[in-house]
Amino acid sequence: MLTRRAVLATGAASAGLAACGQADRPLYAADAQAVDYPTTKAVEEMGRLLDERTGGRIRFKVFGGGQLGPERDTLEMTMFGGLDLNRINTAPLNPIAPETLVPALPFVFRSVAHMRAAMDGEAGKRILESLEPHGLKGLCYYDSGARSFYNGRRPVAEPGDLRGLKIRVQNSDLYVSMVEALGANATPMSFSEVYGAIAKRVVDGAENNWPSYYTTRHFEVAPYYTLTEHVMAPEVLVMSMRRWRKLSDADKALVQQAALDSVPFMRNLWDARVAEAKAAVAAAGNEVIEIADKTPFQARMEPVYDRFVTPKLRPLVEAIQATEVPLA
Image 1: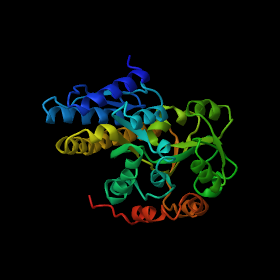
Image 2 (image 1 turned 90 degrees about the vertical axis):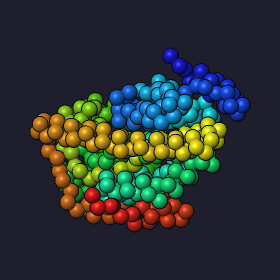
Image 3 (image 1 turned 120 degrees about the vertical axis):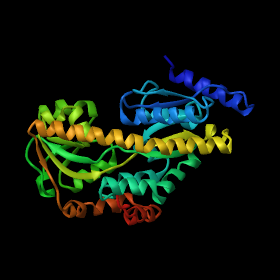
Image 4 (image 1 turned 180 degrees about the vertical axis):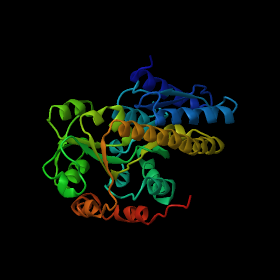
């Protein structure tokens, strides 16, 4: 098994060889998600496209399932140059490039279609470009789902229904502030502990996307799922700038295009997972609460935006909000 130390050593050695035009190893790519997860499959698809388009000259070796460690570790490896490509959540990028926090703001996107249009457009491009001074070449975005609230106590149809509920959140100041602004009690907790915590009433509920709600079986202990769709922060596929700079202009174009071409592949897989989860939850008889007007929830977010949206980030927020969704 390839270890973190081996990747760093091999990457450093290969970087030296590449400078002399002698490197022949595949590009190393990492994804902390399972090997059958849509993002991991999309990175593999990118590798397949490059292999096909270069006659095997550019090859991929994808390490899924967190084989090379958690995302914060693989991010460090990528910035160092020991890892070539990395699919990563935006959260570990926030301290490095503040622009990456913007897509995680609550209700900054109106819909999944709006999120995809904004990230595919000029606003998304500006966020990816903000990574370059930090040793990372942003290639494209993958979906991470629309997050909604679920709990085992009562249906939630308006912000007041969340008051007093203990809601598990990620260990993130942004998520804590968002949940508290809605009147609930934010409880940071490891994701692996959530099922037991809800079952034992340590917390009342949590928030996540459809596939996570279903595959973790949280729907068994939290039968009320409210479609707030408050956060739609995407994932990011990045490449080490050390490796990127050693590519010819022609190969840079090939790598970039293969990354972009893997996006619709990933989205199709993701949409299929969402549909599967919805069908399974419906079959279980859970109560799904539709929110026709999200304005009351959005109105509670003013203090969150005041805290996290600096003058530097405000134009980016406005660019996202101004993005129009193309007609189907």
